[in-house]
Length: 404
Ligand SMILES: Cc1cc2nc3c(=O)[nH]c(=O)nc-3n(C[C@H](O)[C@H](O)[C@H](O)COP(=O)(O)OP(=O)(O)OC[C@H]3O[C@@H](n4cnc5c(N)ncnc54)[C@H](O)[C@@H]3O)c2cc1C
Ligand code: HEM
Image 1 (cartoon, helix red, strand yellow):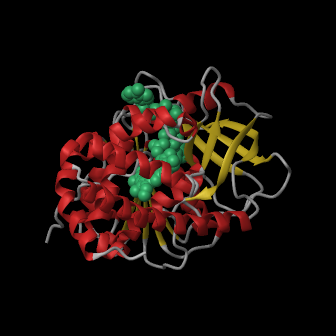
Image 2 (cartoon, helix red, strand yellow):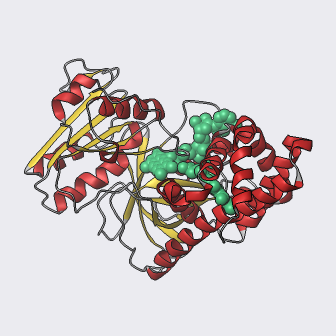
Image 3 (cartoon, helix red, strand yellow):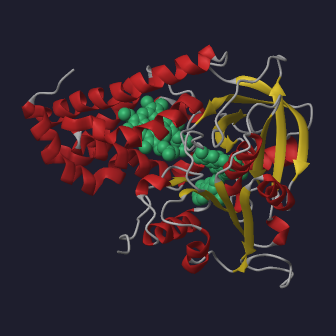
């Protein structure tokens, strides 16, 4: 459905006021929507809601789409990772009108008299167009998952549970119905759904697959989130209560932070903390494909105790024709312990290991990502060759201007 020029003009002229009130509008929207549709709390992450993260993500995307309402194709790259997450979470077309209705009502509530019928009607029309973009892309993703025999959530049985560090534990999973698991691309994640005892609603969290595809099991490696109160709901539940023989539900692998096997340029896999999980899958995939690319694996951990896969990663890199493996600690227990750097990764360190043409995959906590991505920009690596995943609602990282 094409929007009239008048609607486009109204949308564009109201974006600034919505930008001003965007986060308030989405906060009101969520409050009202969950009051009227508490069943949606089975899908949404309550911790992200409490911390205001999801509000910002949705507000930003609606505004970004609205700003580009006459050329929506320009926001498609931003839509894809969200659509992957929606599919992993089980967001369906029938959910969109519920979101639309509450979003419009929240706009009315916050803007008061300024929200004329004309403005509300224009936004209703625009929301319909934006929602349809998601619905169409997600329909293809569901179709693909169904063709792989796994359209919705399915039960996976824990066949092994292995402690990888003081805080990270791996879960090896097989389909409870005994059917083979579909393959995936290195870097993808599964969305795990559990009902934590005492909780009214289910909780869904995404976990990257941490080994190469093509095995008869999936492996996820979960960090126990226990540094802040309240401690992480699902990660602690998995660590403490999910054991070999137990089942968890998960949806089929999703995500577009994936190793491109067609490319031949040098590749760097750079991770901080539990951000190493997709990198382990990518590294093992490169090894299993006998890649002759130049591969540089770089990992930063707080100290030896929380460093998972320390031997496995360097052994894998050692099997490559042109592989190298580096790791460092912010506070090493053993000052002369063979690590390659102390403190954080620096620009000088990176400059020594990569070139402008290296394709860099980066994953880690938010400050780590911001810092590494900015350094890569300064080193002249193009946007296209800096690919990153954030283990929470995707944030637009503020990149510094590329150093000339
Ligand atoms: C694409 C993707 C891939 C991922 N891959 C992995 C992976 O391979 N391994 C892995 O370990 N994780 C991974 N994650 C992160 C994972 O999905 C979870 O976010 C993580 O396990 C925390 O979930 P949780 O339920 O334990 O914590 P939550 O309960 O969701 O809490 C998260 C944080 O919010 C804080 N919090 C909770 N409630 C509040 C509140 N009311 N107010 C303020 N703060 C609060 C908690 O202290 C905690 O620090 C990935 C995420 C994404 C998006
Ligand atoms: C056009 C409408 C929509 C837009 C623009 C939108 C946008 C977004 C964005 C930007 C994110 C953050 C992605 C990330 O984590 O990286 C997100 C996540 C999410 N969306 Fe949507 N969304 C829309 C519709 C819906 C609908 C209809 C539902 C289902 C009721 C839904 C449920 C979710 C959930 C559950 C998450 C993850 C939130 C969390 O648990 O943290 N979204 N969406």
